[in-house]
Amino acid sequence: MRWLLLCLLLASHTAVAKPRGLEAKLRTGDVVFHTSRSSQSAAIQEATGSPLSHVGLVEVTEKGTYVVEAVQPVKRVPFAKWKARGVKGRLLVLRPEGLTEAQREAAVEEAKRHLGKPYDWRFEWGDEALYCSELVHKAYAVGAGVAYGKLERLGELKVKKLEARLKERYGRSVPMDLELLSPASLAADERLTVVHSDFPGLR
Image (cartoon, rainbow, N blue to C red; front, side):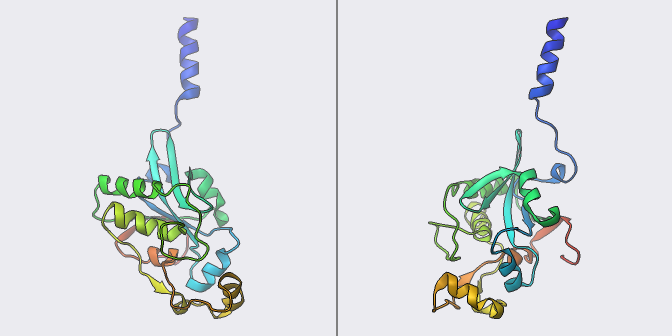
C-alpha cells in the first residue's frame, strides 16, 4: 500500500500540468504578437503605427507550449515566459486559415531549422541572420507554401522622426529602398484569423 502511494505521489510531481486559459486554446503554428520591451520596440511602433513590435510561432507539445522567435539568437522559449515579456502581458493570437495540421507543423519545423542564428539588426532578407517577422514569414513560405504579410520599403514607413536612429544603425546613407516585413504587416493579413486579442481596436 505504501509503495502504491509513493508511486502515485511521484507521478503527480512528474506529470505535465494541463494548459489552462489562453494556453489551452493555442495550436501549433499559431502566430503570436506582443509589444516588446526591447530597445527598438518604440521605433518599430512609431514606424508602423501599431503596438505590435514582436512576433513568434507557437509550438504545442506534450511537454508544454513554446514560442519560436527571432531574438538574439533565434530561440525556442516557454509560452508563459514569452507572454510575460510583453508589455502588460497583452497578446494577439492569429491562426492561418485553410491549412492542415501537417502544414502548420512543417512551418514550425522550418522556423526551428534557424535556431541559434543571430538577430538581424539591419532587417535584411538573407538567411544568415533573421528578425522576428522575417522568421515567421519564411517559416510559412518555405514550410507550408504560403507567404503571409506584405513587404514594404523602409521609406514607405513612418520614419521621419527616426532619422537619427536610422543613421546610427546604417550610417549616413540610410537604405530607404530596403524591403522589409513588419509585425504589423503580418497581423494585417486577412488569411490569419483572430483566436485572441488584448489590443483594443486591432482586428
